[in-house]
Image (cartoon, rainbow, N blue to C red; front, side, top):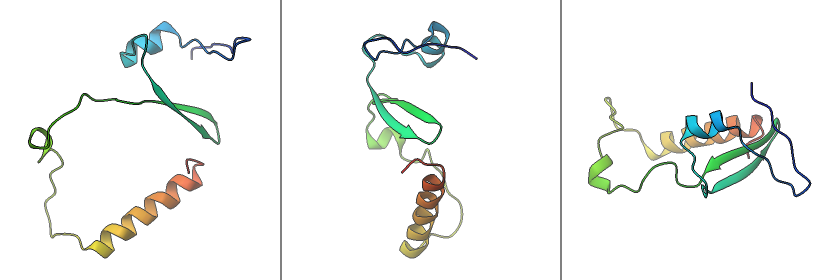
Length: 88
């Protein structure tokens, strides 16, 4: 596990091994989210922009179509799960 510390200016240096493993270059922007365990950093643009026809079909689903009610229930379950983790 890597270690770092907070500077007097409120800055945290991410260890080189972490930056390299995530391919984060200088200037990478992040969202900062407070979670129960601490702080979560997420790159603002983790993937390059794509057109719909480039990605349609990448999330294949086989089975009967879901109803709006089923989709809403699934979303509600996920929100509850994330709230339990302190994410919302």
